[in-house]
Amino acid sequence: MKKLVTAFKFMAVLSALTLNSCSDENSEITKQETVQTKLTTADLQKETTSISQTIPGTVQAQLDESQKSLEKYLKSDLQIAGVKVIGQISTQKGIEISKSLITDKDQFIAIGNLMDLSTVKLGRINDLYVGDDLNTAQTGLKEMMTEEIKTGTNVMEVIWSNKNGKFTSLCFYNDSGIIWDNVLGGLIVMDTRGTVENSNAGATAKVASKWYKEWWTASWLWGSKRGEMGYQITIYYTGSSVSNADVNDWANISLGKAKSESKVTKKTGAYGQCQYALGLCTPTGSLSFNASKFSVSFSGLGSNMVSNGVKSLYP
Image 1: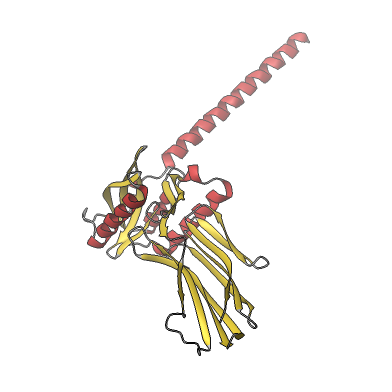
Image 2: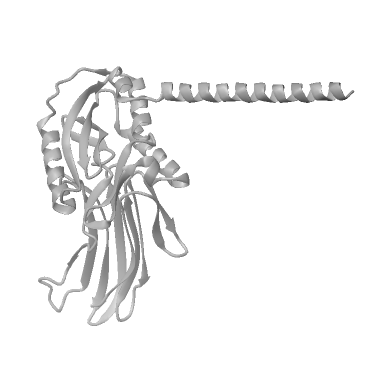
């Protein structure tokens, strides 16, 4: 009986070793399959038609101006070292591969406002985003690609240089200019102070209305306008007494998300008053409006600007 038990134990150990061995082999096969199925720019190139290695003048000008902005705000921390044209996307499969590539965890991405260096971050997607933030970023990028990247879109690699070495990003473009790049598109230039304009200039003591306008403008790295958010309050009055007030708001951004809300909180008496909630962000983040707090908040990671406040206007 003792020999039988010993034999049984031996068989159990052997079975366990066999199962573990099979498990290890399956795990190794899975790893190999994962490596084999990881998409590269070579896969994307197979779904493109050949085009000139000379990029359109508009695109080159945007790259040149972007480099100037990087030098102005980041000094030599990040530079464009060159480009390599891949081709023109010719199939739906090419679009799907493009989506997979720009959302891949190992792809580099940049976020932040160059006029507020504390917000600027650069790294692999997997290093900057985790958990829900990673899902939000990848979903936002895929949604943007679905809307903006079509067959006939050109694609190239931008070669970047920083203190840690060189890396590349995929840049999609057409004859009109750059459509998207994880680095070029992830960064914005926006003055956090905003711009103010009012009706005081040239006004007389007998005017029956007065307005105040404040807005923030976001620009691409190459200088052209990318988005804007703002509000304007107007009061109507006789002498020093306000009889009515109204407010309007707006927010918009190219390749990103925007929200704007405003309401009048005081429309008669010594002054008029409004409350506003505004927000802009790039596709890798998300904006939400809280009605009870009357405020816009940003979540995730990405370039963003949020402004919540109250403005009073006197006759």
